[in-house]
Image (cartoon, rainbow, N blue to C red; front, side, top):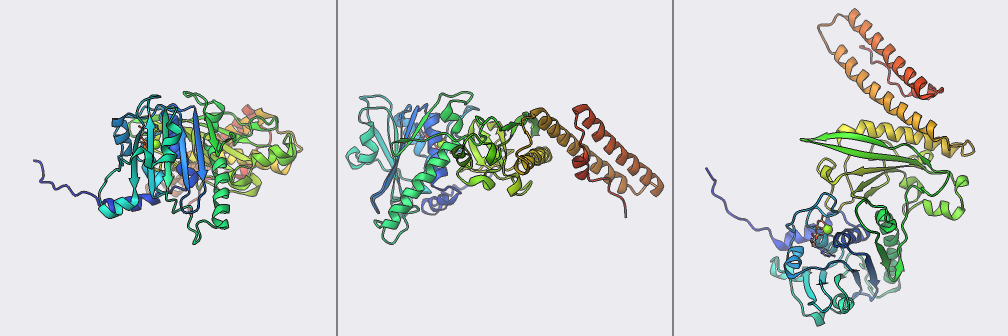
Length: 451
Ligand SMILES: Nc1ncnc2c1ncn2[C@@H]1O[C@H](COP(=O)(O)OP(=O)(O)OP(=O)(O)O)[C@@H](O)[C@H]1O
Ligand SMILES: [Mg+2]
């Protein structure tokens, strides 16, 4: 039997305010808008930051498909309703609004689908929402929005303009020198972040999309490859494919570990400096999660290990399919994922073997690291010994906690399991041609003994 129901409409004034703080900064907010331009098949995106004290504005202009009237109205809705293909960058129907309003008080969208066709404009204005407490989109006159409308005069595409940049310019003197300097610094951070986030799109190495160009204040944004793949001393540890079940689905996660060269092994000093990345060596080590070729999280070991100076040359690309968004708990701001428990063990093993190679490259750069087969073998052995350790631990737990088993039988079983563990790892090492198994023995947990 259907229950009686009352519709309780959320307070626009309150909700829109809390939506401003869901984890964006200016660079990640802009990345969310670039996603939209890519989805609209843009070849070029021009980002312009215009400083003019309290009247400063930021514009994101693309030469994509633009929006018809119905699309524009739906685009402005918090929670746009539409279907997504599996290779799309969008997911939540929120980015345009939540990313923009995290940085500005007034978001204007101007769009045009055909040269000579109509330019349509719509606007979210926080001051209006505050006054009216209603989800009302404004439709200003074209003449009232020159920065949004002007660039569409002779082309198709979409221009998004942010005004009232209250998060960026908090200075008591918004026209002052410090405000201007901060604005300039932010512009350079943005270039670094976008060059990294979209590096596969900028070089045209995505699976299903054309190359794009990003421009920041008239200058082309250069792609930044986190893995310095063009350096001859970079170690390409072999690709691993992890199978993961979540609900009724099985996903394949593709993992590509890299060990970058130590400083002295880089082709040039400038190349080494550039490879450090926007957050520099120590903080750029770790996992790089990609979703449909777009970088979501750059660096950090997701609490599987710490970012040690000695392992700073280790960087691991991880491609997750968008079908696994739920399993990875993708955030609305698309800045973070969480590794599902079922693959934490395997990723920890891959991280640890990559870090081992990285540590060697860092401590003894003169020893040739071009022997990629050795690196690959070490990696496989490490993954295998981790797996064996997990099984040994689970079995010994069962043995120890079985009250029915007499102590003498427990002891015998534990010692057999212990011997088997050592033998499996040794045999695998022989097959993989690794002679130095000492370092692997170090990490062995051994069999837990009952007290
Ligand atoms: N630059 C653009 N060109 C054409 N259409 C756009 C553009 N930006 C947004 N849209 C349309 O507006 C819709 C809403 O965008 P929004 O970023 O809010 O959500 P989304 O991209 O669908 O999902 P997500 O919240 O994951 O970003 C998009 O689905 C798209 O149809
Ligand atoms: Mg979007």
